[in-house]
Length: 412
Image 1 (spheres, rainbow, N blue to C red):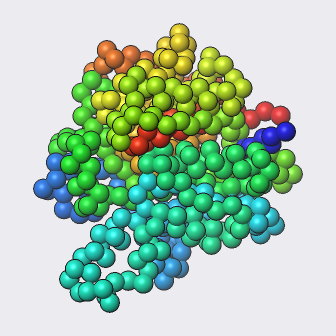
Image 2: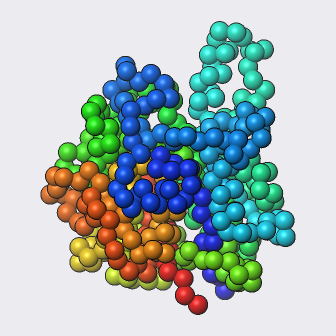
Image 3: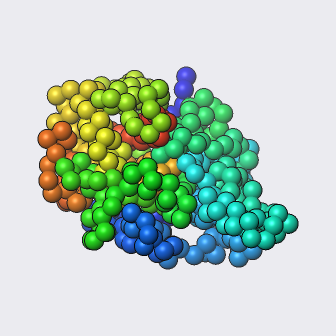
């Protein structure tokens, strides 16, 4: 019999705040973490806005020497992991070999690769940093986080583009269900606001080209949306086997009850027509949770603010939910944070747990002109109060990766 899995700790560093409370307050207030790019000169780029992390000091979590040997996405992951473990009050030393870490990242330490490429070109191979590889590779967020918190159980990294964080949470959930871990520290981390990564996305014409009022650039489901806004940061959760959590008197935010994934087998960047792949991932999550679509109260949509994603996600929801699609409350928090790529599903999972705890639905901001093809309840511009028993989060990534998780209000 599969074990029940609950969420006992949360941590985050993202454009809306460097801790969970600040993030949640700003999310519910409809504040934007999006502004003009400051990490490099973006004046020659078609996109000039991003959701940057502000005021983050890695030395609050790491020794100065340690921090210097970690790239930005790893620093975010370690900080959010330590926050989540502290929030859970989990003593890892008691079960170190049964507590693992899975952290997803779509891109990893691309800033280090960029910098070291210039070193190689200008100064030669003998001047490249010996820390380049462990600062660059995507799995090192999980590796460094496990070292920092002392977790010796299953350790892995999921790389499924913008679905990476959600896949990591789903994989961690399955490990605990199957008795291969008693707890997992899991989520995603990303720091791709760099000249090269930005240039690539600009060339692909996937990002918003708004040049005034950057806070309005991300407008999911709005008729006038013109692309996503890149964000950065990390979101982490402590997932724990229920009996283990109860035995130590842990607080429980919510229970994770469903996970579904699918592949579009369609196109390297575009979603499958009519959201067919997304539909199958939602269906699988519902089957895994053993519930009907009608019991879902809230969906945190992938909602990227791109033409195809928002249209096809809406169609996928209609396919799975039928008449209930008009009743379910939906929002895209990317309207405020931007799209954190491999960390997107992770910070949205943090929000999902808080939605269930507080019965508050954060809004989709910048929604002003309805799109006839996106005609569901997206919680426009103002938060809503609603009792939420079951909530779903969608994440879809380049390459046709679709991941969906379902949380439930905990009850004995």
